[in-house]
Amino acid sequence: MLSSRVGNTARLRCLSSTQLVAPARCMSAAGSRRACFRPQTRRVASLQSRALHHFRPLTSQQTFSKTAEEQAEYQNGLAPTILQSAFPKKTFAILVTISALAYYFVDVRDLDWTDDVVNSFGYDNVGVTPLQFFASKDELDHFLQHHTGDPSHLMKDPQVAQFMSEHFDKLAGGWRMTEKDAAEESISVTHGCRFKSNEPCEDYFAFGTSPGPGQQPWNYWSIMDGHAGRHTSFMLQRILIPSLSSALLTLPAHTSPFEIESTIKNTFLRIDKQIMDSARTAANWFPAANAAAIGALAPAFSGSCALLAAFDPASSVLRVACIGDSRAVLGRWDPSTRSYTCIPLSEDQTGFNEKEVKRITEAHPDEPDILDPKTGRLMGLAVTRAFGDHRWKWDNEFVKMVQAKFWGSSPRPQSKTAPYMTAEPEVTETDIVRHSSGKGKSDFMIMASDGLWDRISSEHAVECVERWLEARDRGHGEVKNDPRLQLTAQQFENPMVEDSGFTYNAETGEQVEWKATPEYFAIEDENAAVCLARNAMGGTRRALFMGVLNAPPPMGRYAVDDTTIMVVFFDKLDEQTAGKQAASKAGMGEKKSWWKPW
Image (cartoon, rainbow, N blue to C red):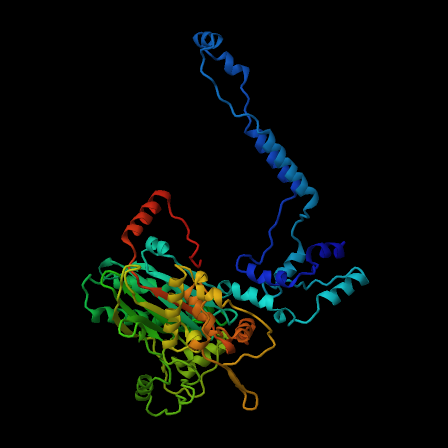
């Protein structure tokens, strides 16, 4: 009984190479639970009763209720025609036939303990079962022959590589807005992606519209790059933009730039203080191993960088606030060179930043060894400003206490005079050049976590988006129609041939290292953010690209870290189109757009 049931529910089937790739494509849409179907007999009965319920024949009682005058008119042929819906014989017959076929040919069963066993692995064992009950030698031989083979077999097939490349936008978590979407939501056109190297991913992002000074509508975009866990960045995704908007809307419409900058800085500091104070209170007053205390401590135990852009469409002023090493750059058209130039909107806050080195050295003059000049790390941490990170902000005795009571991490060995870190951001203000679509070249902004910037320079990232814009224009709005792309279509040939353009040294232990440079650019994605991600992972170096794409966590983070990218195009939206979209939205009700990442 057991073997037959397991055989029917969990036994593997032999699949082709393309079919074995399919589960990866479906994982984003499928949940970890299986659908539970009712027995087919109930479904057929339900269809029959429902069809019969809607059939209401005219009764004799209704005829007798007529008045004498109505009956006379009826006999003389003057009575109005009464339209009745006939019994849907054909529809009923088709439904019954389909239900009967499903009953006899579809294997439907109730969920049992075997499903719980399989679901306990979640996405860990797509296409594999932990239930290994074999009823005969034939079944065992089949399993050993067809389901315990070489795990690298698929990746040697160029067709599989081609398939994964063509669906890279989904693998990279890509999404994009059209001009129609942007007009409807009153925000600049935005493309984005979130490539996961860690499990779980520590990068989060948020964007939208919310009030600014004078309660005027502003646009906001934010990227949170977590470390030592995802809890801080996940919390910031929920509260950073709403908290800033709540503070800004209390200001009058014509507030000075200095006041707006101060409000942004104070909001960042207030959020970090709330995180750290809540955690300290829980650690002091809650019992050891208390669940509520651990919930309050989690955002303080981990940490997060934060990059936030706030744009006032009325004045075309963009403000960017940054703590950590996520980065924002602006691409601006230069008529003299007929190309886009790169304008920095933020500075990386690491030990390689001379301003940060000076700030930390002045605050801790007797601790010259807390910054490593070779790695730029502050007592082991790659950034010098962040939310959370209790071990860089609390004294050692308190860190030891929370370590003992709530399984926290041990103090940093060099820590003597905490705090060493702050969540106060550096804020820049930039006037944005905007033109109506098709009437000039507007600015665009690239925001990304360090997963992108580890592999590409700011200047080359701007050049990559410039090439993407050119390809889109040549293709009359679609990159796939670019004549140059059609002439040099992507090819995945022998994956056993090593690409050029990267270095490694087995003797010294230097791992594979590369940079995304223009000679290796591959412009073949409709999404500008996904295009940047593809090139950061190798571009036209196809074997390198596939190697990076298939490196599993946690190994994958040493190839490319979690990578979140947003590209914002500041073209002015067509007011007429926006008006039509608003009218359509008001008349038909809100409609969920496909681009939204939730």
